[in-house]
Image (cartoon, rainbow, N blue to C red; front, top):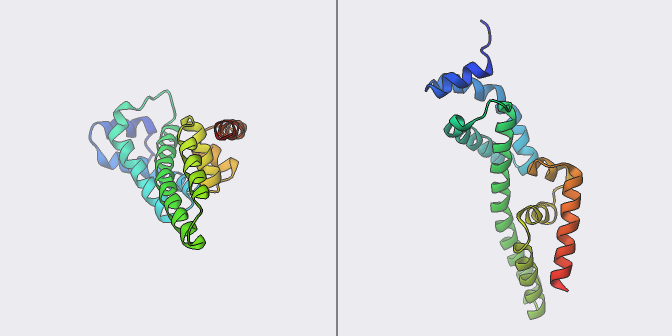
Length: 174
């Protein structure tokens, strides 16, 4: 049996053939899972995010532009889903870190508390790409290469964005 082309499977999926869409999922599920895992670094979260990617892609398939490879489109959806997942985690981790810091120091000084609040507020005022690199690098502990994959940007751009973000934070906080 000859394997159907991607374009044929997409056309059949758009016509309501869920089996055809299942074949597309089978072609890309492993690559999407590994991509998600590389970003979120958690097996369960990667599995959930990969599944969310295919669900979102199914509902958005009519907006897919054939000028791009389907895999590129799927990886972009997956990257966005992963970034959303990391943002949720960052908020949880930040809240947990603040709680742990409070417990560990018994009572943070008013100055320490004010500085932490000021820093978080300053980060929130940064441009989205700068907020993302600060969050992924400092709060999530991700390497430049992983951030580049997550943001779909060259590694050098990530370095420049991180440098500019730190410069803006220094200027704002001085």
